Amino acid sequence: LKSSLLRGLRLDCSRICKASVSRDSKDVLCRPTVLDVSRMKADPGSDVEVRGWVKRVFKTGSMKFAHVSDGLSTDTVQVVIPRSVLSSVPLGAAIRVRGVWKESMGDKQECELEAKEAVVLATDADPRYADLSPDQLRKNLPLRTRSDHFAALLRMRSRLTLATHKFFQNASFVHVDTPILTENDCEGAGETFVVKLEDSKDSFFGHDVFLSVSSQLHLEAVTAGISRAYTIARAFRAEKNQSSTHMSEFSMLEVEVSLCESLDEMMDLAEGYLREMGHALISPHSLTQSKDYASLGAYAEQEVASLYDSLQSDKPFPRIKFMEALEVLKKIGHKLPESGSLSRSAELLLVEHFNGPVFVTHFPANQKPFYMKRNGEGETESFDLLCPFVGELAGGSLRVSTKEELERQCPEGKLPQALKWYASIRERGKPPSGGFGIGFERLLQTLLNIRNIKDTTAFPRWFKQCKC
Image (tube, rainbow, N blue to C red; front, side):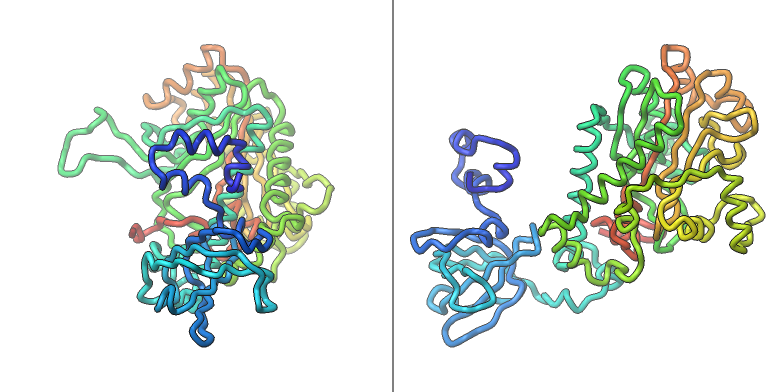
């Protein structure tokens, strides 16, 4: 097969092309990428087509030399275009070139494409993206992928998504699409977006409906009959915060396992996932991955230790109880907040103290949601996983097993009507379960040291900002 994409999917290219109605669809399936072409050996009899954007261009005599990228890797191919083939090759233009893949006369590349046909498909009025900072590009979201640095970041996010699915699928988990529209606020934090019809006093659903804060409750329902489930779903929080660590719309990896009675089992799963993602995202053995990582530019803070650096050790992440964490903070002179909860600065101090990720477990019941299982000492069977650069990365717990416990632990001692279904599954064969959630953007941020979480997704939404 000509295409690495098709080889990866193990598809029969000839069968697909025969089934295609148009010649164009055959080209899309079988046309090599720029990366494919850059790895080909010279062939004087070849007929190669490249499509992409002109990243650099210079002129020597009647020849123009264009470096073309399709945005799918950091690789470019040098295309030699005679004036007789194309009179103008603007920087930033999208072009289609067909020609011969031959040995290069220059010493900076082994091969180059000698153009026989060339067409400009689009031009760019202002192509100097390398001069724009992440802050400047954040003000013009539709153009961010034109930046090589940001394109590399999105490719790494895509790779992380694929690796996540592979990890859980290989562990026999079932992926479930959970709803975005919901009638409950999972965390009870009151930071939900309300969904209403425009210019209407009537409720479309007959009651208040919100954008989902978390998929956990629905995943618990799934695990009443499927023992291992996960999702990567959109979540929304109406936090009026414009800091570099907050967004109003984000993705959450949420994992739920029934027939589970051990908090250690959940922490083992979370730790195993993080270690695998570090290897999958920035493996030193993958040239493509290392090139993308090296291309992040100003988006990444290279001078500080990342989560990936910590994952090189085979030593298990330390596991300490909340009260032990407070003692550590006291010893290093950190003043605790009046609320008694861990601030982000305290979390990062604990990470520094343990020289890497650390699990903090058994938080006081008044600091955690009602659905978490409690022991006889006023503690929850819960954990937070603290990591470099971001502090809290993952939060998980064992879940309350009975309807009666759930009702007792509700803030007012009574379940709201919107959660009756959630309690009822405990009377219909739902066994003990546990799970955890990881903010996908925050995971990318800690693995790559991304300065601003708004740069971990293509179209971020935050307080006072919902453009494009």
